[in-house]
Image (cartoon, rainbow, N blue to C red):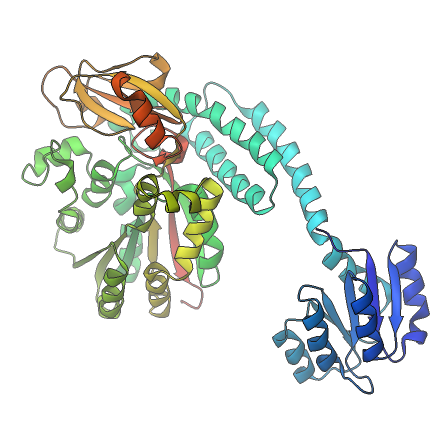
Length: 522
């Protein structure tokens, strides 16, 4: 609820401020005067005020003492200290006590108006500006859409929409957020067709003709930092969406200079495929050929067991010699505590330290099985908030601060994102079909609706290992999840509203890769 446009000015020389008060009243504010602290407290007990202007040097109760008394009456009222004192100690006292602002006399009327307007109407003014800016930009984005958008245009559009999603969520603008969601939904099917037309070409064409993919993370981003500094920290946060990155980026920017690039996950957008492609620098098809003992995609639960070896092999093939690699995977708080005891020694050594954090992936999967967690992370805005809360106290943030202290460059990224799924897509399959909800391998697979999935029969052309003849891959599009006709109600009840991955949407495929450099670093 907005505070009233009323001001209580407390000053033992308040009668000398008549020109200031007249000016504020001309601007639509009501101003009440009090020459003593006790009088001010009586007035505050009688009625609410929008803001208090408080002199520090008054007879009787001094300003700081009165401030504490005011806070017991109204813990949220903005209080501005207006004082003749230019002593640094007075300023520090005001800041330490969390005064809303601080003005040094003599002040002119417009100074006071500026502070009062910011405190009483700043949120409304900012929201009005945000609404105007979004309405204008929304029309521009709609007009700029065309059937032949290239990957750079898609990247720019998806990143900007994620930034707007965060801004509108923070501003509590449900109407504008709904308009944005409608635009995002309409883009998902276009994005799927874009991937269907271009993905195979990306795997065979020249690097300059395609976006960076999962296989390019090490050579294009990690290796330059490693060659320049002799060491680097690679952090992979499993299942981090672009909007979640935007939620934690302001915290990271307090300690690091951030240079953010973007890349496309390979398909399926699932950990066994996408993260192995990062660490191995190879598409699954080539990983299965080169390391058959490490890749048996009929058993996906064990596919990520050799990430350290894959990273070491990739770096050795690029450098022509062995490069030291330290690797840690963090699932629990205990894992995080143990990591932080070893990390200083790891960062002191040359080579690459690689860390994988699984909390976000565990959160997105766990909310499906846990009703309490589902309520806490009900939608994308709640998931962002929970991500930020976790990050603030996480071993990940502690690890980044340790890298900053040691001036070690950090490459922070993710293997895939996720999509908030609401639409069941009926699928027909044999018993041999895999269990995944956003992608499925199997014989004679088909969806009831053609647009519900991309159907792939030539798996090697999509960078995937061959399977028995007749095996097809279906990649879900939009916010769909696969259901069988015989289990329609069961799957709808269990998975509607779940955050899933493995399919083809901007939320799953367009991902951040950020170079973090310590601000005090040379």
